[in-house]
Picture 1 (cartoon, rainbow, N blue to C red):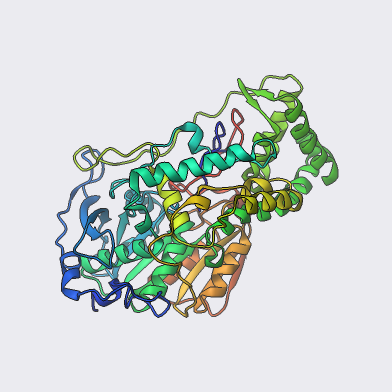
Picture 2: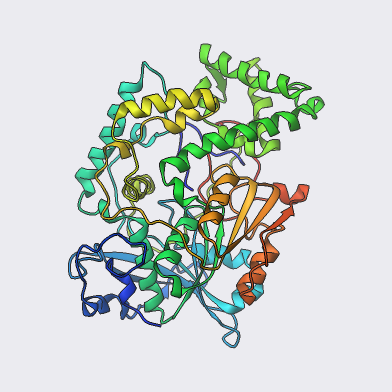
Length: 532
């Protein structure tokens, strides 16, 4: 699941037959009541498109090809406004062994996936690349797929706001302003930027590619998209790997709140790990002393911000970096350096690791608004479900309660969000409850989709199996040389799921591996070292 920026924080180390199911009327037994019947003939213009493939970029491999498809903004009105969906592919390396297509999603909501075939071609084993065309796509509203914008400024992009009585009214104004700006710029589109419609777009891609079924690897939010697809199109779901899982019963406020719930045991684990290495980090030789060192730094920064490489950090800034505690070594290094900065010692130069480049060609790409990722995130998070409270005072009460329950991050997670003022999406949320086969992969220590979230998805997908990586750290598993990779590869190449859920234990080296994919990264502390 996506984690947006906390200004000025940056990342620290630490997604047959064609037509009938595309219509809201018959997409799923769990679908809400149809708004009106849709003629199959009206959908043929989408399912029978012929993609015009061309090289995505002159500097990229020639086999990375891109095309743009058309999909209806509203599947209940397929003759109305259309959206673009940008699709990419790298063909299977062995025509003789080819099984079909493997759609890829990096997460979000709001994460572009057009480059996923390029990234995955270097991460996937040869046996998988022999059998599948690797298919990427930017979901509707994202990247090259009719990108949306709300025209948000830097302050409006900062949505991780701790609760304070003195600033709550300002936070309410911020949330209302974001919702109003988004509605003003894209009010006719935003209600249709839902996971259900992205699942329908995915099935249009399947149809256009001439496949009876799709296989799929989705990370983070991509697990929810995959789960919704299996609910809406169970007979078209082949081999689904759902990596770092979203709990469908928690979308979407609950998936933000689970960050606070998951941070507390991660902090306890970190405190114990760091206490055993007091000689290295100097933060305390018992878990209690390590914890006291951390909270003393928070209190110190609340009284007088700590200067780290020219950035003044408050106590709230430090608490906002809760995700670092899922990486015990990285967190110990960061807090040790923060302690030195508080004592007046200069912090080391920050890492200059750059973000992974976007391989989008001038000939293919359109300009993408700078706030596109955030706009798409709020569009999906707010339109997918109608469970967001509408009363600002509910958020106040929840934030006060959760700061006590989860001191690290509880008030951040439960404070007011723009969804309080968002208009309803075009449909209610999908209830995921099926027996479709799928493989769920879950690290024990995942900052964005904690273990409890993976267990929640496993509970709703009764035909699935789950691989839990004990001691595994980080968000995103398959392709990171995890102990879970072997099981996932076997499933994709043979179709055989394990007989029961599986646990494997990460080695110390595996626990420190990070997936080299453009997955959304959680925030940390500015100016401090982070490991790749």
